[in-house]
Image (cartoon, one colour):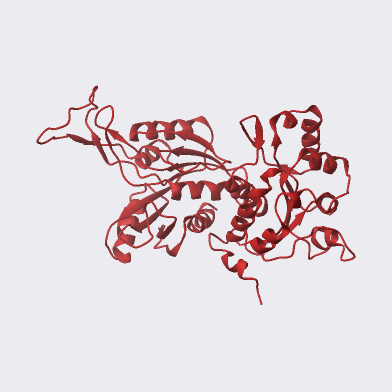
Length: 412
């Protein structure tokens, strides 16, 4: 009978479906984050096999990782030769070995080929078997800046080991956010369909300022556009993400340009398109269609019986981009409210037939769990020659995978 902890597998996406990961945990206090990391990897479809050093077991108990992953924890090497079973030269080995967190001590041992813990021995076997390895350093900043640690990290990189840079905060080299680590894992294990390609992606809302403290906007969170940027990164593409005001964290692998107004977003997009060869624009942002015709220089007084604000239309980013870049592949997004799927497709297709967009992703915000401020979405992906693909309600990360799959086929 399958362990109940595995019921979450694939609940976010199938990006890591069929992939197995050896999660190696060492004696940093950041080991407390590895449960959330293991669970997030599983939610993207991975099978996770935990391995712990003796010092890691002094920080969290192996039972916790056994519960988190549904698999037994390797805490010592026995006659079962666990390091070879997981990371040897045979067909049944794991797809990736992830050391998170990795202490300065473990990094040094791996760089020098010293095998004296279950973690270091498994990693050495993986490197010899040419299995991908990712190291996530976590330590005090003074240790991270030690010349020998710097040299050891560079040595690991020269051996083909991936290194996820820590967050330098409060005099510490802290373990990155779980989502950042997962992004690197997905990028390492996923297909590299868009290797060498560059995309500009817009995400989030924009603001139309009324006065110095008031503005009009919409409820967009930016989650859908961020998910598309993550998926493009995982396929090998470089991404410039033009991000409106949002509380969402930007993906760690993208170049992020923060903007507030529709005009700023338009200017940032056009600048990004002109600064380097770009293969596509994904316009997922909810750009304000109308903004106040002027911004008052001072705060408007309250207590009035009424207030009239003159609104003016904004320029359409996809239209401006198409006018200047005739061959650019453009994916537009369209939100409607309370209409049938047939009508939703028809309205989306107008952007295809007019030549503005190559693909349009459309949804109906009245449906439960769709569009703004939620983690899920349900869309129609509409393309030329009567192409339409319905993506039923799923996480936005999974919806992004379907969108990028269609982009890959359409751009060949």
